[in-house]
Figure 1 (spheres, rainbow, N blue to C red):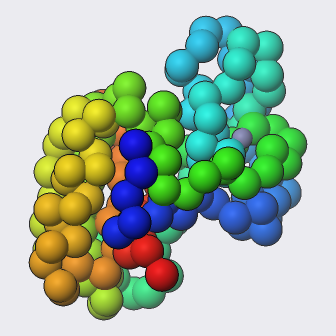
Figure 2: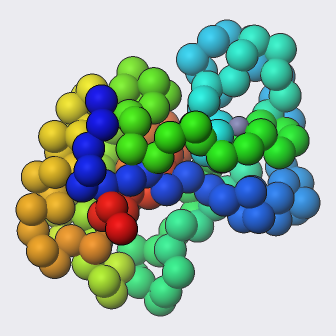
Length: 151
Ligand SMILES: [Zn+2]
């Protein structure tokens, strides 16, 4: 599924490297589709090593700023292969989607099935005040990805 109207913004290699350097809890994936990496936007394969740590996706003094748990592959795993394709790791999960204006103030939010994410993104971006979206796993609260308007 593609859309020309938005793009998924995963953690950059530099951001992921900075987070890894601070350390975290090490996991070895023991089931498929349970350990979603937020750099490559792939769920880890069984046997792959990950690190669990906290990440604050906000850049300002927004009252909504907070750190959330994320998994990363333990070692640099590269960028997602495409930034407008709905990653499987999002499509298979229940998600919380939060819309923020340019001042990082929340203006809309919804809990959805991941397969409905593109529709939800389009609906939230129909509001011209919506600057970007944050997606979290609805159940465990892990930060998943940022969504930006296509440039
Ligand atoms: Zn990865």
